[in-house]
Length: 187
Image (cartoon, rainbow, N blue to C red):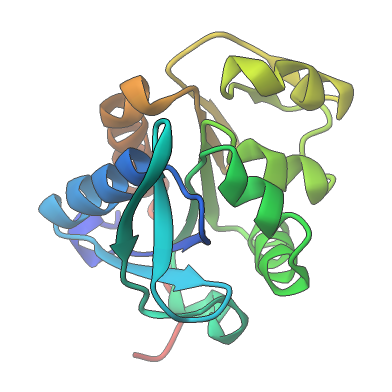
């Protein structure tokens, strides 16, 4: 069984990521001892969205195109309205999403983040949640949408909105430790 302290997470995002979601995901996963890296389209800092206006400029650790699947145990996709809309037309971001979807690794998406899973044609037949405004998008892609804080379906975890982030992170932690995901990468 893997401990959360041994897990390594990749968060992908770009300008317009919901500030609270990214910062709380980083904070909560790091508090639990996980190693977390943020990958952006450019590999440089991004400007977050803070509910109704532009927020802080937040640092990045690497470029999405440079992310190696074998270096991580899980992919986390935060939302915001702008972030997933930009990422789902970014070929490198979608390459990374598809690689994780096709692997035996955990994929977690919150709020509007599940739009990347829709774009990857990965939701048909799955039980999922998301921000309520994209419910029809998720359903039209073939998923069974449910109104719950966090939903687990196999290796996928989806979360509803920023108010549910603590439950979402607790669910990620539980699934990493329960499933015993093991990173096969060389450090």
